[in-house]
Length: 190
Image 1 (cartoon, rainbow, N blue to C red):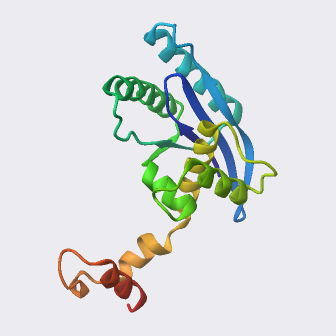
Image 2: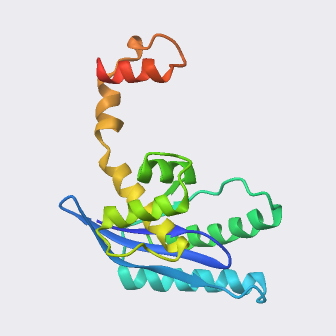
């Protein structure tokens, strides 16, 4: 399986292409593509679409995992990143990719086990997962690799998905909301 991870942005789009075969990760390529802040937004969006299209044609991934938008302090930033993300989603869909989104919290938790991990911690874990000699850089490319790894791990977590869900009867649930301890007990003592 080949996965294209995307860290969306307007000025910088991070990408990471990873193969996953026989329970092993293999980095195919990673990096960033850039647009000039002095260029009109509609031209920048066209450039992002074209660059992603070329990347998809070059590496032929089956899946695209992309970071979901999260709260920005600057409304102008969230709008422009949202526009870029929309263009990236459109390009992926028009190229026949299966598209999956992950929040920054999901990615950090999936990679480091801690949802408030620092960038450096994410980079270190990506390096370890992928057996890289050096930290992946720049940050946007490291994030894209982390998103791709999160997607691969998500697909492989069948036990905590369909299999486990089918073994737990809704009748066994004591109430609508469970504490963390109740959830752990339910999982471990089924």
